[in-house]
Structures are given as structure tokens and as C-alpha cells.
Length: 120
Image (tube, rainbow, N blue to C red):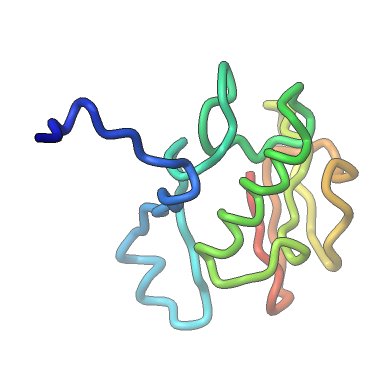
């Protein structure tokens, strides 16, 4: 007989489930989500959904996590724009997506372009 505490769930079986807010859900052209650490593949101090390309996490795992987060929003990972977060006051207007790890230093991003997913 299996007991719940003896079950191991593969990281591949768990997907990110973003939290949503009713006010943003009321806007039909905006998809949004606030992600927790659940649903990723990183381990150790980066355990689970680490999407930070500036971390010392295994880059392949970070890219897999980014793909999972983007998929949860219904966009390809190549359309995900994330800055290098610095906990400052800089905000960036996003007209085009930059390569992962090459984003500007900022803590806020905005866009009026369709098909770009923004992440902090």
C-alpha cells in the first residue's frame, strides 16, 4: 500500500499554475499570472521555478523553467521579455523582445505590443 508521504512526483509532472487577479481577468486582451516557485525543474537554492538568467542556476534548467512559465501564459518562450532585476527605480518600455540574459537593468517593464509576455 502506498502512503502519500512515500510518493515522489516528477518535476516534469508538475506545471506552473499562476495566480490571477479578477481586475486583470476583466481585461480581455491581457493574459496575466503571478507565479510561485511551484512547477519548475531547478534544485538546491534555486529549487523549482527559477527563471533568472542572472543566477548561478544551471542555464538549461532556467530555460526549461522559462518555457514552462511562458506556456502557462500561452506564449512561446521566445516572446518572454524579462529585465535583469536590480531592485531600483528604472522602468523600461518594451518594443521588442531581447535574448534571455541580455535584458536591461530594470524593475518594471511595460509594452503596448501584442504577443509579448512581460516578466519580473
